[in-house]
Each structure stands twice: as structure tokens, then as C-alpha cells.
Image 1 (cartoon, rainbow, N blue to C red):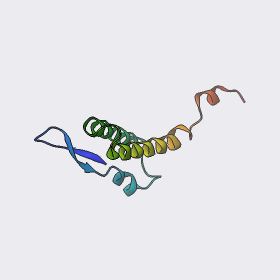
Image 2 (cartoon, one colour; image 1 turned 45 degrees about the horizontal axis):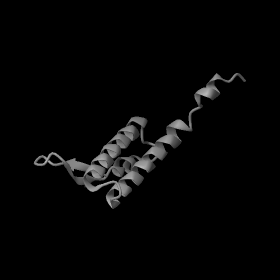
Image 3 (cartoon, one colour; image 1 turned 90 degrees about the horizontal axis):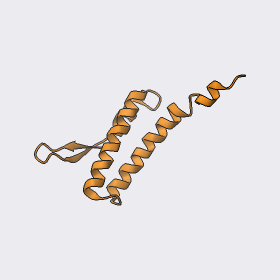
Length: 92
């Protein structure tokens, strides 16, 4: 969920669903750049929510959990699926 920037106030005010992109394309069709973009937008959304509503607000907690899901998805697809630097350097 992203927040739409208010022209009048210069702040984010209306949530936009961030999961739509991921759901429409399906979990395996989401590209790395799309996922990184969604992570960055969710991170910025969380920052703005925390600034306005506070760290312990229900909205901040929900947004943080959504960010966690995106980060976990990235970790599963792009970090653990590729060999680590240590494994690449080890001779057979």
C-alpha cells in the first residue's frame, strides 16, 4: 500500500495497494527490479507513516509487516537461490 501525495499539503494521504503488481504478475513472474521498486516504495511509505502516526501505530505495524514480506520474498528469490561468494571461491 502506497500513500498518494497530496498536492495541497505535500504529504501522503491516500493508500494505494502495493501488492497488486505482485499479485497480477504472479509470484514467479515478478522481476528483480519490480520487487526492489516495491521494497523501496514500501520503505518510504513506512517512513512517512511513522513520521505522522508514530512507530507503534497499527498502520505502521501493518506497513512494517508488508515490508517484511517483500524483503523475505527478495531474500528467498535472489539471495538464497544464488551461491554465496564463499561457495564460489571454494575449489571442488
